[in-house]
Image (cartoon, rainbow, N blue to C red; front, side):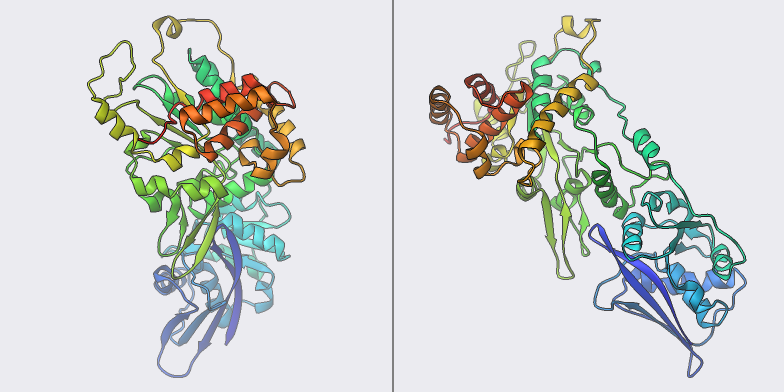
Length: 510
């Protein structure tokens, strides 16, 4: 007998429907076959399903069982098909009416005793179920809050196989999960760290405020203990609040990686990712036989912090060029080519020299000029060109450290950032651009005109610093953001002068 159960799988950060077809035939010797390009986890499901059925009072048929996962031309992976396969076998044996399964999406991993364990990618599945007009979906109880973030689809959380079978038969009425999304959004959008906790470093705070206002990438150079990591961790607290669509897209990326917490089913605070410098290029950009998102995608709509920048592998740093320019990353493998979103602010930190104390007035630097040159050259010129702001972070003086006067809070800084971003949204409303850092050459020509004196200042800086064309464009973008913070429509010489100061690592090639 043939039965069909609707399920779903994830490709990239989006889901697609999978029809699990189960054929149980009494002829010939018994066997169990799964077709439709399953991975090893799906092939092993037959043993989990067999044990779960027997341990919950169902007979596992000693017949020819063929499972087809349609569409059959797409590689499937994961353990989410355990539940639909088990239900398909039960339905094929006549213990469940086929009509009772219609309109429901099923997903979940089965343990040997029949408990339903959580799976990855439930949020994209819920989005797809809503788009397909299904009447409901049954997911593991631990995934129910995550799926219920999507309004307009009934989500039923089940703890074990018997509970699902009784629900399908109408013997047990599972209640659909309901979430107050606005309240959840408010609770999950708070940040633990605040700029009021940072003593001194006013010029660095100014640079980070400019970066947040225009979406610019930042490189901080300073000795150990000067507060670079502390400042970077607080940058997300001054970025504009996430919108609901941004939150859904960010949560999708975390969902497919299995990083969603039951207590925090929605990523409403901008993510902050800080990978160790030993990370591989695949870990940073994404990869694998079936491509998975990397740190650049997990930091989508947030901040990617690269501490000890020169210590990262050269290959890992160079693969950052595409996502920094295109705000997405495409990973191609023999099995698939998948594009993940990667719109993030990159904040990097490095010491001024190998020992860390070059230009530190309180410590002696033991590095030779050759060592310093070799250390700084580990960060390539093309990557530095893609970082808009380079800012020096000196050691904090004792007087500043012990000063009890109140420092400006993240709330106050964010108010100015929001005002600047509002000007940019209005300016680029019809251009598909959201902040100054995303401006294209045509936008620079239209919105970043300068007078003769400012033009001369830029020309002088280009010649003396040996700036590239890309660095020139970055200066104009930062200058425009500085003007936006002052609510001015036109760039002035002071804006360009300040923007040029944020190119401290630029130099003519040797």
